[in-house]
Length: 341
Image 1 (cartoon, rainbow, N blue to C red):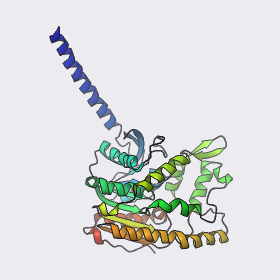
Image 2 (image 1 turned 135 degrees about the horizontal axis):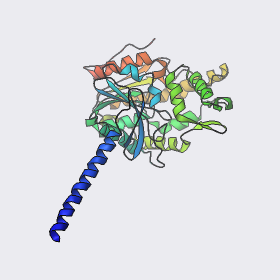
Image 3 (image 1 turned 60 degrees about the horizontal axis):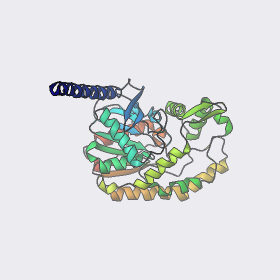
Image 4 (image 1 turned 30 degrees about the vertical axis):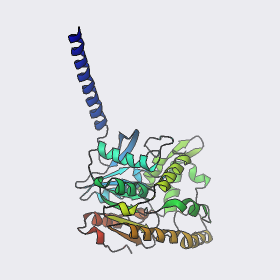
């Protein structure tokens, strides 16, 4: 009887191991890219996350979107980067096609998502490129997970955002969309592109990922509370540049031009925005740039003249060439490039 019990216990344990291996293989299989430029999904760090594989061969480059955007905001930039690199773009949890997980948007959680996706996709090490609030994830990855990071590229994202809400809330003109822009996805896409001053398939696809149709027009997929949690988590984390050994490039927008201005805004409103940005937002940017240069062990900071926060939409071709050049540089600590005209 005891011998029979032991036999079934062994068989049961073996069966359990087989089931665990099958589950692991199924999870790994679910993270396989669905094709270049297509929407792909992976369950990692407790959430179902969206990513886009832009193909290419060579070292891996991972693109992280800014607050409120998705992987699709890189649809214009990413294919240009996939020349000598394998490029993937990730969508932060809570946004677009990635899962919403209420009350779980700390910097540590978001960094865990990036590492979880890398593990699931068998990526041991990558260069990380991040826009806007993604700078918080870049800094923590670089400081606490140096073995996973090749190089870092901050796209107007190397900031301590403690004063960010105070600065943006004091902008002297209303920047939100009018009611007619919220009538349909097409209307909002056209309004958003006009506000950004670009004609871009990336913006259009991003809009269609972050907005949904309702009985009364369209509305954001993600509640405002999620964005506030992400911002609070970023502020709490603080950038620790001195602890980052990886070479880093910080590219800053100039903060002295009209940007994300409603297309129907008057010249007076546009002038008021530029005046405010020049007197308040630009000095904040310059302080952040000085902090980055002082803190980083191996890094370069550049400011792109007359550029907006979405400088990779302003200058996609130049931006792709600059990023590729930095990632390939033999001496990244002293890398230099000509700025766009």
